[in-house]
Length: 440
Image: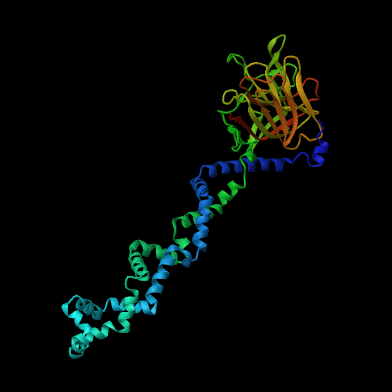
């Protein structure tokens, strides 16, 4: 695959931009998860179930817009006040409470009441005259007009009603133009809208779970940022891994031109792993397929390092940011207890970048052209039960369903000089390596 045109026309995202996208995607997803578990979001969701109902909205509208005079309390209070303030009815009420009426009503029950029909008797008796005058007064006539009337009965009903504590409370509520603000529902409404403006909730509401499909199932299992100036002794081992501990791990091969140097060619500087292949004459152990291990003089040294003792994983996502110089072999690969399976996440053979999956008979691989291995790129392997998929930065570059491994594998790095190559120094630089398990 030639990536020249992809790179030229933007199909291949720059490493700097892609790395930032990865970081932002994980950071955004982490924030999304934290907000999803927050008490504020839980409260917001509960309140939304309340304030978005038709009944809540209708109640809010009614409390905010209903006129006092249109309420039952308003009608009763207004009618009561109208009766109290009506001139004739007001005089009726005054008479009803007067001493004059009480005196007259008591007189009506006395034997002397019949004397009011006798004009001479009335004329000669001051008390009879007083009672006669009251009985024929406008005040008494007004009283008899309302006594026992529907209006008087309505007044008594309203008076009994408006003097209750319950009515006073309800009436005061409806008289208040800002009644809505006094309710518990208003507090819920205000809290809901305050939460709806909370930056975390605004962020959460603007996202969908599907936005994080590429990272949601990833669980970080291995992170090597090379932050310290020395390699972790517990994470990396130098030399090849073999199932048997008796087999020598630190060796080279007879058909190679470098001796693997037990970590002496590997260092960390400014947060970057540097695996150097340098010109250096040493005698070291080499594996010869016919003779076994033999001592051989090499003119170059390099290193192989791997995580078999600290980290192995079956499936998942493996990702690294790296670059290399020197027209020799540099590789980031996955290995297991035996020679196979063997998966190259990245391999530069001195001419081209390659990546692929080895079988007993062949290397199922893709040759990558059009990008410079001297520049940093992010190489990713997505390993599922059914296939292997490789990416360079954002771009898928190879996919195969052949010989997919079904066992745990470790991460390994090495540089070497094939017998057929012109020997020269080289440098493999790794900014970081990460591995993720995929949660079901």
